[in-house]
Image (tube, rainbow, N blue to C red; front, top):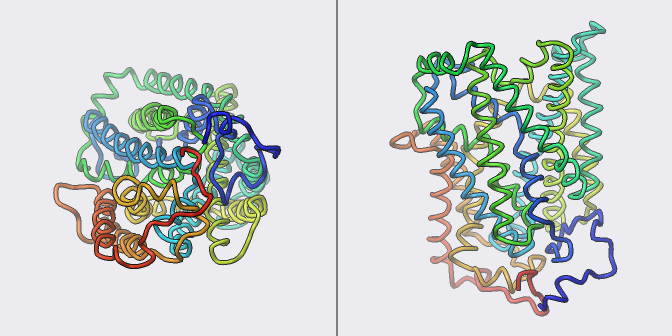
Length: 470
């Protein structure tokens, strides 16, 4: 493809509501490095970063880590997430394919339905949880004004605020990648600055950083393997979702900038602030601390919370539609992206208002980290080792129905992840999720070699098809 052809958009709206759901993102619609940076700063600012920091400090548990041990676990965990995000993002950038379409090459057109439905359920759970997080902070700031309890001990104010903000998040996701980029761009600097200022204020109130370190030195009992597994579990869904964002990148450096914005800048900052906040105040969520410090900090804290969760939850719902739509199309049902966003956003909003975050979130992210990391194994093995050429020759809409190596290796890997987490701990406290990913990666290679002669395993060459990077 010539340079002029790449840079000359056809006479269609580049911001169409389908958001290239069933086709590669063309070069004319690609975004700048700043877009990748801003989106990933906003995407990376999710309260799980604070919660993980608090867990490392022993909040809510009898076991924790010293500050130095926590920094090591954060470095290893974020480093692994950075590498996985970059490797998947690079494949997305070069092909222009979203996660569903790139999965069709590895899993087959019908085989991809299983992992995509799992991702759809995960992102629905995250959307519902984040809606609940917004409702919770308003509940803390405003209080129970009416005295009316609606359901599960939740106040009327909580339910109404969840319904309102769920609708806002849904509308933003319906607007597509442009809305995500715009809101993230102006929210990102504010989010980062306030987080740093809040950390300084909390430490100062506690008596200084030396006292924080002294108190942190009393934490013990959590292994490095457990710490790293917690890190992976909190963010692995975001790593895999990154494919749907990085398909808009123009260069490999832009992919790294986006991944670094999340896993070198935003998320480690939140981990540390969550750890320090837990030591200083007993609560890893510094927003909860801010709303107890007067009207000004309450307003700033609530605004920060809403902006931060807004940028994240748009991406959750945006990606959800890119899983549901192609999965439905593989099954013979054509659904428009906008309608999927509205329906799933409505369901997630209702779940959030009924207390999904309060009652299910903790177990949700633990199982997530243990079981669903393997989804990326077949994609990584195929793109980097087994069938690299096929990504530039095969139209993902015309793939064999089922490629067994990917489906079987994913199922085995997911079961191993759960087993490693709950029943058969790996030696040296090796992270369960990462162990399951390695099992899937290796098993996929073995099965692919063993089944290489099967017709559906042969390279697909689609006449007239050319990837954007070709």
